[in-house]
Amino acid sequence: MTNLSRARLIAILLPNALLWGAIGSQVFGHLVPCEMCMWQRWPHVAAIVLALIAIALRGNPSASRAFTMLAGLAILVSGGIGVYHAGVEYHWWTGPTRCTGNHFTSIADLMKAPVVMCDVPQWTLGGISLAGFNAIFSLIGGLVVVALASRKGAR
Image 1 (cartoon, rainbow, N blue to C red):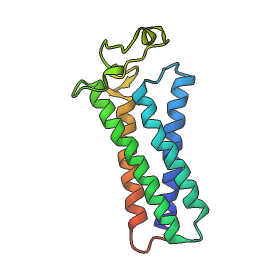
Image 2 (cartoon, rainbow, N blue to C red):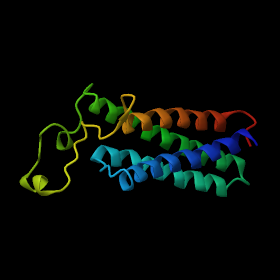
Image 3 (cartoon, one colour):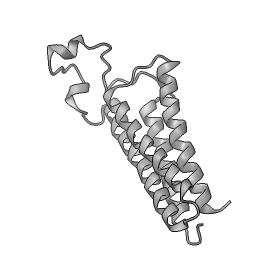
């Protein structure tokens, strides 16, 4: 298996695992995602689409490499959002006022159910929230994808 093949494999499997893990925690764990949780999902969807294009273009190594690198960057974006969200949860910095603290923008906000605040993790393991785990896996995985795809001789 070539470096580019490995990069494409990681670029398709990792965002799928993280996205479906988040959906599984929602469906089976009954966790309700906050607004920032949803922000982290969109780059994974983009990475999946980009990785599928890279796989479809595997006969054209330079085009496949470009789409694989873009998929890796999308994974890194989700990791960056995860770092920001985890920092909001740990109160290292403030997040958007519309989903942190006791701030509501209108009476309509109070009528929406359920209200899920971005600065309160719903689940942790060893002190790491789901946003924190997304940050860890996405940053490491995205860097691996980019590194493998950018190696000389990657086909």
